[in-house]
Amino acid sequence: MTLPQQPIPQLLDLDLVFVEGGTFKMGAEEEDQEAYDWEKPNHEVVVPSFYMGKYPVTQRLWKAVMGGEEEVSYFEGDKRPRTNVSWDEAKQFIEKLNALSEVQAYIKQLDPPGVIFRLPSEAEWEFAARGGTKSRGFRYAGSDKLKEVGWYDENSYGETKPVGLKFPNELGIYDMSGNVWEWCEDNWHFGYEGAPDDGKAWIHSPDRGDNRVFRGGGYFFNPRSCRCSYRNSHAPGLRVNLLGFRLVLSPQ
Image (cartoon, rainbow, N blue to C red; front, side):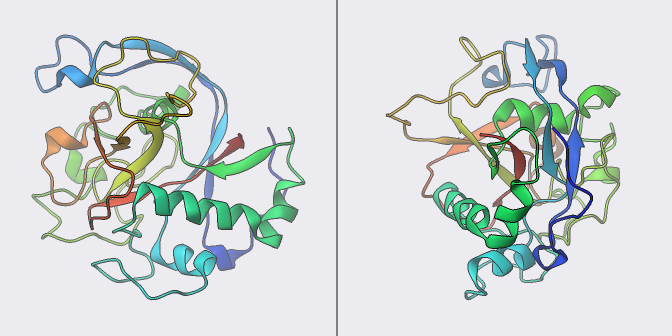
């Protein structure tokens, strides 16, 4: 998959990072004393290439796509992550984003056809957080020292921060450990028994179940919750100031 030289108009404040596909071990290792049962078993997954947002969706990007509606993130600021957004609302945002004329023109230039913006699968999210094919095996997204790459309970002073202030991970992606939790496409499963091994979202259709996965830890949580393998879930209609999302660009 290739990107054209002309980027998406800067109005959208949307930067993308290429994540070359590869094989990785998803989930926590059995000997990890901080891991929970629902992070296991550690298993091999093959992930195709995709593009991921360099940052979580910001309030500026949200307003550019949604028409400048009243701000509802608890901590306001154009460069702060958009929070207080449900999984359902994130999907509505993505639908509007894909329908924008400038985005439609951009997508038509891509190869292969059928490329869209969407939520990441849980496998894509963890693969990118771990550094993809450039992974150095860090515990958090880009370092074994969380304070270098993330905002969490010990350094955030109880609020979200503008994106991109900490160091990025090996791929040049920011804020994947800490700052805000990020919705993924997948249904929630208590563990990985029977999980797909092709990088796709784990979905039961047409019955999507009660909860959706979120990843990454947040400004109000401890380091244990900011590890690359940590996962949790909430109902798709839930709106809290701890939850945001990040975009992926790839075939549907």
